[in-house]
Length: 320
Image 1 (cartoon, one colour):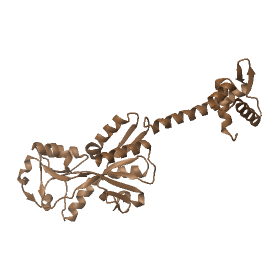
Image 2: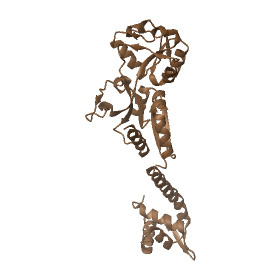
Image 3: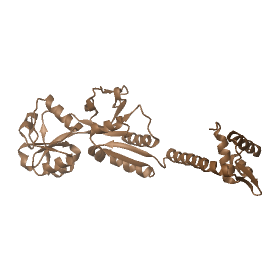
């Protein structure tokens, strides 16, 4: 393998343009320098690559063979440079995001719409899943960042006991040193219990959380941050529940509640339009359920693509 790849560059242009003068002009070097480098390449390979003709320089059979490979490699490098230039100009690239139904619907979608308007050439891939799956995808480098709920409840994900602590800046950012994850609070969310006309006896009354033990409850199924958060809150208040229904989505919880099948536990956003219209009502309790947050989670140990950094900047700047 020849040590100086510049020889191959000169060889490529002489062969492509059919002459030393044209190659010298293209490369902005002197004709003697072009001739010298071709001689050095031929000497290194111990073969004649060109022959002079009345029209300039033409390849020998051996030169034709070498040119097929050199041209392929050199043109691939040119395409790589062009593609990189597109990425740097944000005309191309990809952003990989992890988000749950809730965080995608009630936070991320407007930012994706704006980002697509600004940078239509960038591909955006969204992996949909609950918070634990999003965190795992980030750790496995399958996504660039995630939008999750309740950073305070993530400490035991995947069997790990990594502590989460507030950053010194006091800006609402949180870091998880063991996994190099950083959480940025981007929006407050509120968990509520809602019911329909069958349960009007609870309406306009200040209830005790213990009353939930006697209600037919509708909760999310599976390993979700929302389920963990509410269950932990109720356990702290010595409330033991046995939900009548475990459903896959919060939208389905609202639908079951609309049909008076029980009292649903959802994030307010999912039931807001039905509460505003009076079809559902919110149960009031003496013990307030603490608000939590949607968070952007990033892995600070890995560099992010230019496109991913630009979308993160758009979210954080708009949020301020």
